[in-house]
Structure formats: C-alpha cells, structure tokens
Length: 396
Image (tube, one colour):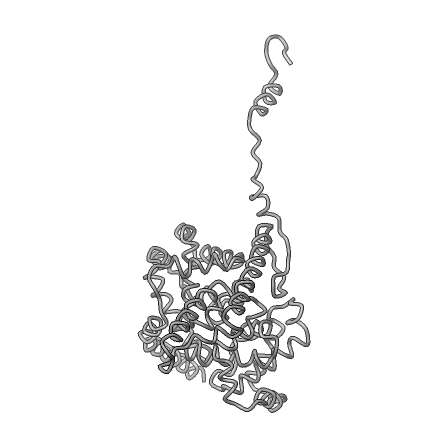
C-alpha cells in the first residue's frame, strides 16, 4: 500500500519476509525428534526415533537373509557341518582341506550373525558347553537345583535383591515365572563355583542366555562355559581383579589403536572404567540393543573374549570426532551412552570392530597384555585392602 509516495513499515516488513526462503527442518531432522516405542527381536521394548525403527526393520530382514545362508550351508554340507572345523593329525589330506574350508566359512558366517532359531544349538556346540555337560551325570542340573533350593547364603540374598531389577518390563523375564527360572540358574551356579558365587552383572548375562537357549539347563551350562573357559579368570570374584585387569588392558589398547582419543581423554582425566566396567561385567547386555549384543556373543563363543576389546575400541572409534570436541567428563559419558543406546545395526559396529581398527588382535595378544597387568592390579588391590583394614582397625 502506497501513501504519499512512501511504503509503510509493515508493508516493507511483509515484502522483505516474503523474499526470505522458508527454512524447515529436513525430513530426517524432523524424524529424529519423533519418539516411538517398538519391540525388538527378543521382546524388549525399545524407545527410539523413526530412523531407529527403520534400522531395526532392516536388521530383521538381514536376519532372515542370514537364515537362508545357514540353511543353504546345511543343505550342501550337512546339518552339523559347523562341527567339522577341528583339525586332527589322523585326518586324510583331502579331509583336512575340507575342514579348513569349513573353518574359514564358519568364521565368516558367524561374524555375519547366527540366525536366532539356530543360535541355541550352534552356541551349545561351539562354545564347549555340550562337552562340559557330557562330563557329569544327566541329572546334574536338576539335582543341583533341588539340593540348594532352600539354602540361604549372601549370594542368594543378593540374587533375590537383583531379580526385579533385571530387565524390568520384559514380557517374560519380569514375571514370577521368569524370576524363578533366572533365580534357579544363578543360585545353582553360585553353589557350583563358590569362588565366584554371585556377582552383580551375571543376572543380565544369565537372563539373556535364558531368552536365547530356551531352557534353564542349557542356559546354566552356557553360563558355566562362559565363566570357566571363555572369560578371564577372577572376572567375577569378590575383588573383581579380572575385571580390573581387563580395564587396564583396554586402556593400553585404546592408546595404541586410537592414540588421539586416548591422549584427549587422559588430558581430561577421564577414566575409561566409567563406561567400560559395565560393558565387561555384563558383556554389553545392559548397554547395547539385544540383537547387537547377541551378535557380539556369536563371535564371543567361537573366537573368544578378544571380541569384547574389539567392540569397546569400535565404540570409541565411531565417536572420535565428537569425543575430541568434548571438554567435560559428563560430555564423554553422554556421547558414549547415546551411541550405545542407538546401535541397532550390529553390522555397523562389527565392521568397525574387525575391519577399521588398526592392527590385528589375537587371543594370544590379549593374554600377553593381561599377564603384564595382573601383578600391578593385584598389588594395587592388596594395598587398597590393607588401607581398608587399617581404617577399620582405627575405628575400633
């Protein structure tokens, strides 16, 4: 509107605003703020955004594809082909080549994931749980649970305290039936190995084993082989010495494989145990989505505990840019927690863990690193115990 040859301020403002492009958030940005709840493959209710739900749907499709790969292998090689991967001096040369081929194929397909319906039997066979179970009477587990049913120990008291806090809200685990099954497995193992007894963290591990293995007895034997053969000694004893060793080994590995991150965190006086303790004690079961955790366990039960370090390094590596810009301990923790909460695609994590972390870590390498750290950890724990005893003595 023109008046006296001049344009009003209001009209000028309207005209100016009309020339400015309207800036709207992208579709991806808008989706990031839409929170949805959905169930994952193992019945856990997950809260995420629309992109997370889409990723989970893609993961489900990948699981179906991997199932077809395993069925094809069974059709061509035989039902238990994955057991024919151990070398023997008595094998003919032609059979040795077949065994080598099976071993290479098995490592490759396991890293791509074992289909959920095959996990129980593949884990049970490859982990050594079946062999361990075969060394005792068939009624061992039932006899054990009956014998210890009414016994009360510090371990059983702690187990009873932790049951309601183990994956609360899960449609089966968080029920009287689920609590009872988990209690029987944990209590039975606490009597099988009095040195370990029960340690917080094992409740999450045993719970996930129950969901995968379907039966208490198989879950019990998987827990036994895990604690007695797969993981480091003393990881779950009273002083958690094994866990302290793992933390030191990881800190050294982080300095070697991700030196910029390690130097930055050290300058901030950030202790990696603030996030890694839970990873190593709960084997990622409390930190990552269930299918991502179980994909790690697929490798764990075949290749050993080195995968735990590969994955821990990968989580830090995936966040390198953000971590290098962090200036507070709380920021680092938030970055790591946000990432682990949304790691719905196991392939993304495992690709970094095995293909993008510099150098090659073997079980032997990890064992050597542990040996280096054991004496220092034990000396530190012994000194801590002496100080504690001295304080207690002064109070009397």
